[in-house]
Picture (cartoon, each protein chain N blue to C red):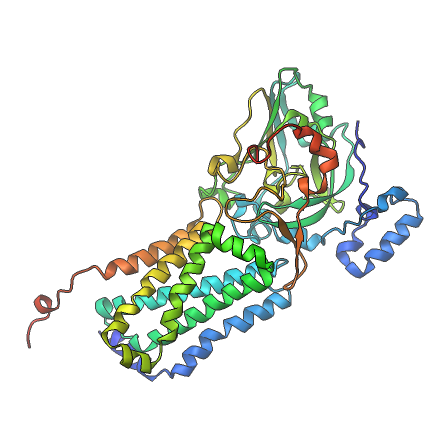
Length: 204
Length: 301
């Protein structure tokens, strides 16, 4: 248990601004790489993928926080809001690269959103995250009360949509998107494990 | 029978290595060659096709035998040995057999062909290939009159082609052409780029190039050519028949189910490159449209 206690103590001391700073840094970094040839000869698609992948990873980290506390005892709950907001930040950048640098043509953007299933799914994921980021402040938490928790279960939907979006866009049978989807589904499945608190923890 | 198709696109197919050594030297180099009477005729001026750099062409590849990332082929294709190499030519031919790479090349005329290359993923390059017409090879081995199609297979060697250790596609990679497509003077068996030996990541030592079809039809590292009277199975069609047809001609009017084919982006344009309209048959309409006369191209996509 010592390691877990150390981790919890350490987690309590990390300033929140540092989390935002560290995790926001890849955004300008990859943009710079794209500008200077560091992302290969087709930087637009590469940048789109980098941002999308970071967003998906953040969604997964966000989903891991509750099971980590429940089953391992590591408490990272205080980072959850930052993780969620950052996930939205990267989803927005991913979308922006697609709109502005990739497709460019307005008529085609609409056609793609309506006609291409993986884009429809990705767009739905973005829309689902909108109410979450808008209510990611203390005022909303107080105002919404128990409804806030319910609303933020939409994260589950967003993660599944994100995973499906990735699965859907690749050609052939590729391992990576399947791993992402499996991890997402696995983390969601942990929510279904019944709570055995009263039986397992003896009264002191 | 070589030289049945001449490039009326540009002087740039005579562009020497200078083009990839230093793009700024490109125009000077071309001018020099042109004055040396080396750069083709005056009619080569109606359109200008600027070749992509050697770096672009050899570092952004789809060659799933080495992995699915665009830079995987460049990273891992050096693990492939291409000597010795032989191609089994069988089926409806007069002289079937295993032909060594040298025997395949014997009697072939290597030409420079600067072609547009359009990937089904909606990106494109212009590539200065070196190669010979497939028709010449088929003539050499003798095609029986019953033959209607040509089937191709890529090498399977998972020890050297790490992508083949995963079932991304059903290996070997398979492609096919109708015989008239295979005999078309545009259809090239390429052995080099920019006058250099074919880099491994581009399909060494020998690959097909069919410039009016999506790139995946241009099968790489060929070890088998079979003449047949039946439409051969092709890898992407086997993987997803709804998305990839046997013909797979470049067609801006028939979308891929998951994305539009109306436009593409040229590789090498950087972060702010704009899309360009995709041309029917990738710009080779006047050369090849007659092959498909009367066919419904939305059905035979």
